[in-house]
Amino acid sequence: MSASVEFVRYVRELLAPLGDIRDGKFFGGHAMKHGGNQFAMVMGNTLYFRVDDISRPAYEKQGSKPFSYSTKNGVVQVRKYYAAPAELLDDPAQLLAWARQAISAAGTA
Image 1 (cartoon, one colour):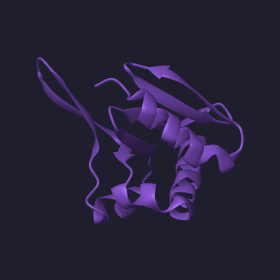
Image 2 (image 1 turned 45 degrees about the vertical axis):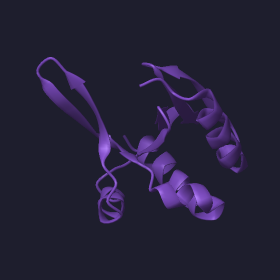
Image 3 (image 1 turned 30 degrees about the vertical axis):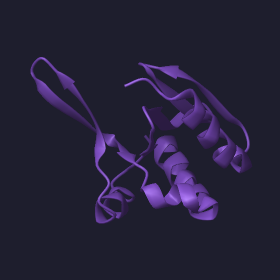
């Protein structure tokens, strides 16, 4: 589930207005950090944002699923990261709003 180089570049451009975003490889994917806190990751062609108990219901309402991966013992769900709703990629203002919420969730972790 490697991160697509093109998709990472696209996400980086969309998130540029947030300021100092650092990113790099992360377990076959790509991590994005703000202020030293990881708030997003890209796995394949999917953007995942960090959630907390306050923001998680909005993702679930949109039908987003948590990041998951398979092991020999079954599927592991990482409920700290949910897929960003696809329509956010077509609405930069909303994407930035959700990203700011993810930055806040990452900062209180």
